[in-house]
Structure formats: C-alpha cells, structure tokens
Length: 196
Image (cartoon, rainbow, N blue to C red; front, side, top):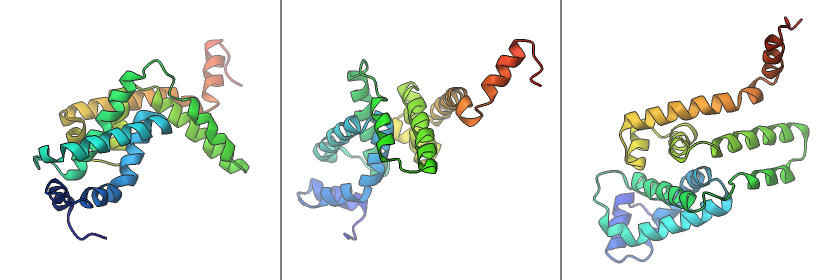
C-alpha cells in the first residue's frame, strides 16, 4: 500500500510516475464503480463510462486545481461520463439487465430480496438523470449534500431539491412494494366500499 495521499499520487502521476495513477484508481475503484453502476443503469454502460472517465482523468490530471478533494474530482468525472453516456443512449432501455439478477437467486428469502432490489433499481433508473445522480450520491453512496454538490458542480440547494423530488417519485413508484395491500384498499375506497 502506497503511503502517499491522493493529492500526492496525482502530483506524482503528472510528474511522470507511471504507477501513481493506478494506485490512486485502485484505492477508489469500488466506490467509483458503485456510483457508475447506479448512475449509468447497466453494468455494460457503467463499465464503459468508468473506463471513459478514468482515461479522461488520466489525461486531464494536470488540470486538477486542488479546489476539491481528489476523490470528489474523480467522482465528478465518473458521474459526468455516465450522464453523457445516458444522453447518447437515451433510446435504449436501461432496466433489461436487472432481470438477470434472478438467475443467481436460490432460496425464498434471497428471491424476495432480489425482487425488492430489482424494483428499487428499476424505479431508480426511471428517475430523470439529474435526480438519479443526486440520489445515488447522497442516499446510496452516503456523500454529504455539499460533497455531492461539488461532484455534480451545482449549489447544495439544487442537490437537496433534486433529492427531494427524486425521493417523492420513488416513494410514489414504490408504494406498492412497501405496502402491497395499499392498492387494494384504495380501490375498495374508490368503489364506495368500507374494506370490511
């Protein structure tokens, strides 16, 4: 494990250290992949976007000004690559890959968890890209609103409002998953029945 900080590794990379960028990437690979996967919508798109982002970061390392943490800078590049890719492939559905998760389910609890995961991923993929990116960073990956704002290059208030709108859409979309009987109760009430 290289004892240098992220900023020192990036500086060493710019100075010609051929191993520095690889070390930097391996330190943050898991989180970058998680953000790419949830933002891009499919493993293939996430892989392409992450590769594109790391090539861009590798080439543009000299332009890093140190105004944010190196990890914030890397995440910003990954999110932007995912959003760019999503715009380019907008006509292609992003949820078809989710059904393949069933292939690995073996017992009843696992199947139920996978079905819930599928519904959550599907609902997340249906959000507008700006809301999805904000929710992935804040709610899924646990970034603070301020860090997410730095990654998305927008004010913290914008991140808050995107998260609020996205959460409201997710709550509505997932209401039957959280409470499967709610739909039947609403139908009975709308038909004038008491439900008893």
